[in-house]
Amino acid sequence: MKLLKLSTALSVLLLAAFSVSAQSQPGNIAGLEFQTPKNGMVKQYEDGRKQKVAWHKQQNDNQGLYVFETLTGERTGTYIVGRLGLHWADMDKPKVSDAADLAQYQALVGASVEKLTTAYYEFLPKWSNPPTDMNGKYTEVVTFHVRYGHGDDFRSAIARGAEARQKMNSLLHYSWYRLVNGGRGGTFVLTIQHANWASMEDDPAVKSLREDLRAAFGEQEAMSVIERLNSSVEDTYSELIEFRPDLSYIPAK
Image (cartoon, rainbow, N blue to C red; front, side, top):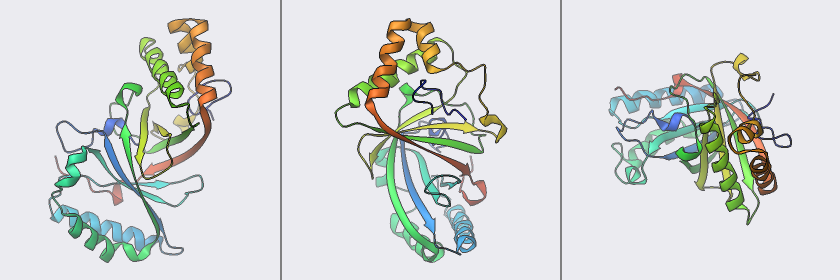
């Protein structure tokens, strides 16, 4: 299964530019917690999350809390709990205080959690061609680790690829993010939404990146972009996550 057809050597949200934010002009920051339940306590964890959804509703919280379950990879079984579409300043003045939120977490969820990791990501709209809706049940998540000192090559290659995709009116929808705090430097994330398992099959109508680059800018530029991309990437890692609306708090419009 090809994830993005980045090149012959490098075949490869989260999510529609975080348009789900309650703000009229959402920001580009996602605050994510990776919560791994204790062995044998998944039911207790999910029950606690559902109770926390009810609590946020009682507080009339204006910031959504979106939950995804990791289905593949080393973090299988880990839940991703995120506030999406934030501006940094939003975290200075949340409607529900951090202290109150933490108290409810500890009371309802904390005892069932084995491990918790927090990270912040920035959505990169100029690189992305996000979908226009949030109907994807599954999301492919591909993490790129860029070689030290090769960040400029990677960024220029991805930006040029985005230009080609846009120029050729690519049918492929995807979103790019950059890890800004809480992990390894030089980490970028690509997400692709899927409505179901069947939609993960390769679509013959979607051209590869090399083909779009060649059509948009010619063979020489296509080769240059692919070479910069291949030489700048140290490794990639793929996962599949599932949106869990039953565990998520979605503010009323």
